[in-house]
Image (cartoon, rainbow, N blue to C red; front, side):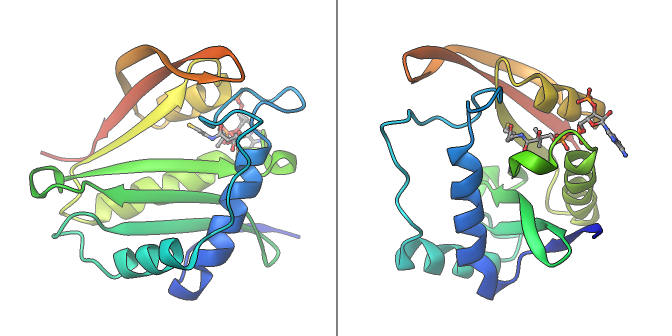
Length: 182
Ligand SMILES: CC(C)(COP(=O)(O)OP(=O)(O)OC[C@H]1O[C@@H](n2cnc3c(N)ncnc32)[C@H](O)[C@@H]1OP(=O)(O)O)[C@@H](O)C(=O)NCCC(=O)NCCS
């Protein structure tokens, strides 16, 4: 079964949120670095109708307006096994920037698929004249993610020590940005 990357459609928002929860639940387990800002005693709530409705609406917001949402699935056969999201800046004054988040289910990591997914997201942003910068945050210790982002051109812009405390561990949040134009 092959892998491919495709956009998340409006009627797939719930499936996307469920996948994101499954990926979050694997953070810090079985040798994985911590990549989610939640401790093990904070179980995720399932996707609420409000959250699904909000993301559906934001999928239709043009990138010229800010607070838009776009997403991509990495699919294995027909099954989504990874996701990448882009969120437009909320304020009018930050609508030239998008924030990226991504994750793959455990069994699909370490094969170059993250690079395939991220390069699709970057190419989408490159093709949109309204998106001039991409930003993301990555936890110190998530070396594979850091290598991937650096390989695709993201540059560290700062770090916040002790930004999160997850199961008693102090997490440094590293901010990275990619300039697309301007
Ligand atoms: C971080 C994450 C998205 C990276 O995706 P990935 O597919 O695992 O990573 P890559 O695309 O960089 O590939 C990983 C490795 O596979 C190697 N690889 C194997 N086969 C490959 C192929 N055919 N083509 C390219 N690379 C290949 C790469 O060299 C790379 O090596 P490296 O990690 O030593 O640099 C993924 O591991 C993940 O989802 N982790 C958990 C969630 C997470 O951390 N999300 C990010 C939060 S900021």
